[in-house]
Amino acid sequence: MPDHAIDAIFEIFTWVGLGAGAFVALLAIIAKLADGTWVPAQAVLADDPHGRIARWFGHEGRVGSARLTHDQEKALAGRETGDVFVRLGRDDRMRLTKGSPLVRLLMWLAIGLIAVGAIAAVGSIVMLFVR
Image (cartoon, rainbow, N blue to C red):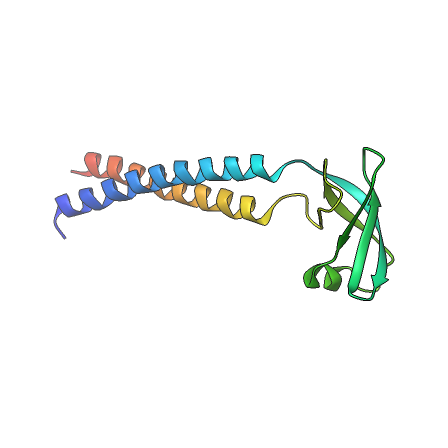
């Protein structure tokens, strides 16, 4: 493969990696802000004719409740109480993890793209000194 083709490949991977990585990182920040603030709470789990329900006391003193999803039911099977995270200002939002899976996915994707861009930039600089 000619040297100018290798240079072009490094250049493309540098700009696409760094540009797309910065764009995805911006999307991750927007998703994190839109996700809101989640705080830990102790929920009491109760059976209902339509499934299981989690009930908790919020930081504002209000009682919150949410129907468990199938995955949450599996994770909390056989328990009467559970550690959950609830969204501030909402009485009907609850999840088992503090961070959002979407935000985590976007951050790892941004890190990967930026890493590809940085490696390609280093490879391009190395190629300058090799010749």
